Length: 270
Image (cartoon, rainbow, N blue to C red; front, side):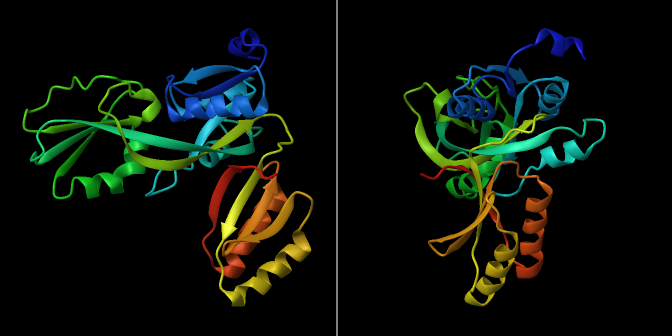
């Protein structure tokens, strides 16, 4: 047992820090939903989050879907890496609704726009930024999640834009620029039965509906259920997402139906 795990007895949640990041708000939401007294531990990287869990930290918060233009699937790659460990599991998913606010400084006719934010925020809002500043050159700079001042020394002809989680902006010039839903994985070394439900939505044409129904007739259990709403078939999973049967059924759907699968995490139903 490492010195860290000997000292850190009790319930702890590791997340990508510092305080004020999206992972920080996800960790707090997870605490509220669990109604537990776990303490938060800020980490400098997602790899460190995984290492903390491997060393004995009870939970870890890892971002799963981070942008409109791609998926950051660091978790799966890292868990498959033997140097990280084989015992860490995904035990739940959590969806976080985030509002991003924007604050601008500089002339409207500036040809260059410097965007100060975190990389994950830049990726999530990239298309919106391109539309807002059409025809202008966008320059990204990685800025602290909780920064309150744009004190970056750049040419006076540039427009400076601060784009952060609205909860971290305290100025009078803030306006909601973008709303998004970000998915997080909850990881743990323990085999914990989670009451949240992991939802996969599949939009099918009528010819493929019968195939899907046949799949679920064979594989539906108390932890895997089929539903239908607003034109989507919902594939609902309780508990650990990476169980063997669940992963097999997901791959079977992809192969037989040739359809895209949309992941919707953290939803609860009455």
